Length: 558
Image 1 (cartoon, rainbow, N blue to C red):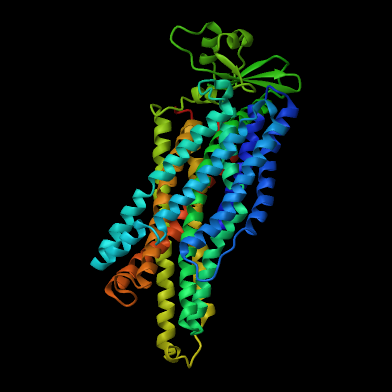
Image 2: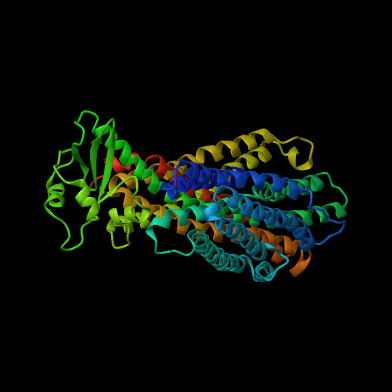
């Protein structure tokens, strides 16, 4: 699950960056555009090689503490990240020498990933105060440990959000040389943000390895207990399992942060796909027209027959007192009508913009993508709603699947009492079948939610509504995902901390409360939290794929 999620972010960030690179350098010729397209791919290739090297740096001693185990894992990631930063410097200078500060955008992404990982470790490891405080609350009962876990989870959101916000600002600034107000460099700034996402994910090999480590250690502990091995074996596997919970939580935090940057890059790629959608529509409409004929596609675009192809012009909103008879004629004409206008004069006045050279701020102005536009505001609410409804669906799915499993276990105990004394072997296969079937069946509705809602919102509210929905889903999904992943990881390690002999140890009332917290935390950290990453990227991907459909067939309500 986490592997597929991170791989989706990995591919999404590379592809979105490549698309933005081509758009950012459209005036510099194909050779530069190809280099901009290659840069994220070369960075990813360097990251793979350096991740393999980093694996060999992870070494530990016998009887080491959890803090030292974390340092050993961190050593591999840190050295690989430094190597990627150095590689980024040389690759940026080689491929795009006129924009060599782009390597700093990659470095910002690497640093952001490291900071999010460090904060997640602090928020969930039982070596630190937050998880120990949750464990202490277990002395008062299950209710207080739930309250403490929710509170720590909510509190843990602030650092990743500040880090991602700062990373976006810095990556944009370095790539544009701090020309924030230059519309012509806007796509270049977003290209820098995309490279930041690629940088963050460049050491994916090591991040996935540390995440996969958790389940391996957990299962080793289960095998040791079932095989009734010596207590020292179980103590060591418990230490490794606790570390595994922290590395898993760190991996989830990393995945959520990278998903946020990837989704932002995909949001920019969506605007580029809107541009492509207009060009395709214009080309289809002018096939049977005479050369030079101008037709109105909709109130936002004109198409001009130009040889075997078409030129597309965006009809920009006119300021008060701006405009002429030609502009008025465009407004009065119906869609698909031919209009006789001087396009060059309207371009000179700023009332028409060539679709090929339009900047992202031009599209923002064209669709009035501001919170004062009802379509955008409704879209934002829909995006926020999606995050919460999706979480509710996945949590309920866990409850239903668990209920089915409990009923099956009770049935087997009732029909075969010998299972309890070991004389009869339980039917494991049926339990696995129930679990697997429920997992697949219960994900149908949440998946449809992420697939259908972006299309419906687009058809009803247009491009502006979709952009609002993507922004709302990204911001709310990012925050809720961090909260759930960190709260779940902290509850799990709080229980482990009690089992290590603190606050009464195993069998105490505090331990029973800790088990309740851990049980609540499992669907938080393993189901709803991580799946939100996939939702925000799925919404973006679906929007990109159906951008042409939305451009052509959306209702003209706003």
